[in-house]
Image (cartoon, rainbow, N blue to C red):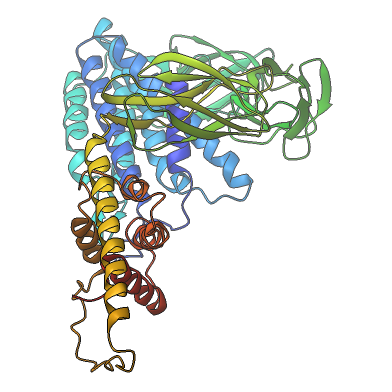
Length: 574
């Protein structure tokens, strides 16, 4: 869990191109500074908890300090890895004083626990005071940082007050600095240091005069002179060779206790992703970098990737390609056997080859009628020929087979309500399973046919009456004086007044013809089938649907056409 957390933190905070703002000027806003500020503010809280547990004599204080240092080291190395690949790493500017403080906190927590068991150890007291002094300098570096949130400066000053208070408490535990030590003794901050790492040798003496710290190995000696202050002394030393050492101090004829130190190889590690994934049949490039504890690239080192052996390049990088013709997950171990000064390292990564993704789209009407078929169509991508399952309200309804990706099916609802219709593909050896979008079908009862028949009967009666009237009128005219000519039109006939809007015109027309307002345009059109006004009503309906349902404006010619046809249907003039 902690490794995952470290990875997430690294991904979020390593990439930024703007440096830390100075106290004299405000630079361009950098949004990522907010996350940096929040993360390192929480790190300061973890430092406080570690100190508090240590003061209480709880070993968890040491454990928490070690965990925090490890996490910060991992972020630092990950950031270094990306920086070496050309990605500017903002976190590298922020992390140094936090990492230094964390390492010193590890040492202080150990010292405090030991001091609580050995109250008379003035050497431990000297070590505690020296470490606290260094840690206060780390806090000063943290306080001087300035991050940005837009134009607002973010400072850690208010967040380090608790740490300073705990450090002051630790100093009080060691007693008065005016009391002269009673023992000549030393203490080493790390008795199992890494090669080239710094360790601090602390000591106390009740006598005046210089002290010589002796570091002995086989037949060689290293002498480090130091001058005590108020009986306390400390020296920082870095071991340059592996092996076992004896460390002690001499002052005149007096000799302190001896501490055995074992210098370890430098740890090495692989920086690389934990998972490499791609589609089956594709090529996965497994790559990484071999670094040591200090962030130095281990170039030209022999490593193993699975059963294959290869050399890292000059910058410690390596890569190898893998492919698979089937979906599978392969565990691959990358290992380094170590060398004269570096310890061995290994990391197991996962190669994930996945099936080809599929998707389904489904189309269908929003409304249907009880007892009538409703047709749905859809497509599966990629265009497969496969068996699909149709679901109604979560229950399998029927199976349908797609052909070259396309499919269709019909269903006949037997009751009113809402149906959630979707399609599932179970997947196969090469393709993932998929579920389509959901089409919600509202099922209603069909409108009664009785009004339609009544309208049709009325129309037929009207047509018959017109025919009879016209025929009789023709016979009457024939009886008139053959020399009588028809009167010319005066042009004053009153045109039938139609609504201006097309939707209003269509509604007016239906009302005049006695069509049930609950019928759809197509159902209303069906009433006039096999009548002489059918073609006019069909064209009127098409233009109406184009405007209303298709949201497509009519041309001037189309508007004139629909009005002329409406007048024709209604008889032209009043």
